[in-house]
Image (cartoon, rainbow over the protein chains, first blue to last red):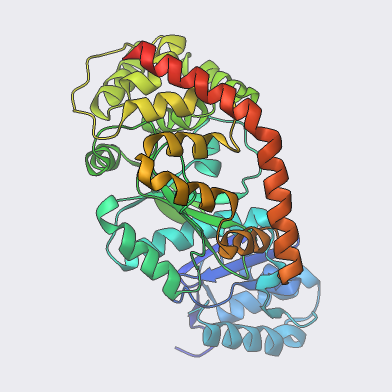
Length: 91
Length: 318
């Protein structure tokens, strides 16, 4: 399976709330960690991951949401996912 | 797309976000140390249709009394500190502690029993746990009292202040909702009261909603007289000090009076921290002391009349 087909998912070890302008997350496997705020396109990506998606599917959804070619957002989405994995909020 | 990931941003945590997230944090903290916890009041009560949805200002949880200290220690370990001052008197025994986190805009109240449930707190918790349900807050499933038990708990919360307009309004709103329950559910409410030492404390509510008032099925472990005095009290500020003074043997009263008039600094430091006061200088502490004394002197006549009335009523009841 290529990296683009590997499924990206929200960590199950989270509590999170969403509002119109942002998503706030708390890691339940690290209660001492500060809450994280996702806003703008980050919250769009988070909402898209209500179900696990392959990275290329996620890129397609974000590109559609912003009406831009997939190639233009692919690196940013991949970088975001990698950052979220390092923070423990995505798998 | 702009920078998609905003980093740690706890200072901007809003109250409505914090309350829902905080319930999940408390539940996980208890789970981490193997202690049973029920999410009570606030948003859970609203989700169960027992109150109108409205913003909550703190997080309330009830824990198995046997694990109370373990939960507190776990919360401390993850930054939720209990810096409360608990040596000021209360008419009913201490029932909860307040943990606060510097980055969170709400308090976390951890209860080890709930006033009005006057049977042994461990047995009461076991009854509530046995019939628990779940509620989802912040996408996390939490244990919570079932609606019947939660209605009883909420009623006790309001009845504790039934001499106030706030208490009367809240209990009437709850009663209006509960009175529509079917007879089986109302019978269940009566049986729950009997099983938790709450027959007397819930009696006005049971009458109001048409639930049966049944014979207690568990002995009381906590004084019903304290509950009656608390729920009948019309004043708040000075009365607990008068009640405690009356309870003490004569030889301990001078020291108690001294403490009432001139409490330790940390009482004021705690209040200032709660109110986000910017100065904790000696001058600010002294000013807070004088304000408190002035409030106390102003409140004393009404509190004294209340105390005399409640004491006479207590003698009449016994």
